[in-house]
Image (cartoon, rainbow, N blue to C red; front, side, top):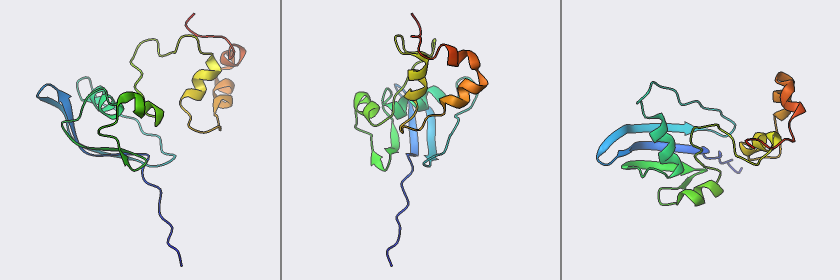
Length: 137
């Protein structure tokens, strides 16, 4: 009998401490995101949400701990290479990529061909009407 091996978490953080200069903002964070799971990172201003995301995307170098994507340690992987693995940091602002269409924005967050844009179009019919329009122009 062959034992099935469970897929590793898509994101696994263990003992993450990160911050700026010598000031730790995030201390000893553990977080596991399983395939198909949706996770929200919530907290008040100054709680370390942005620092955590910057550490995951490689913008901030962790002081300690590990970050794995699909079981692969990405500690020494550059932000551009992390983006190719599906990990990227999009700073706040208008929240859009200029020149892309509404429909293309929906596809950005999906690693598969399956798309839930139809649900968004049902809930926000105005989006369906402009799905081929370029945004931010």
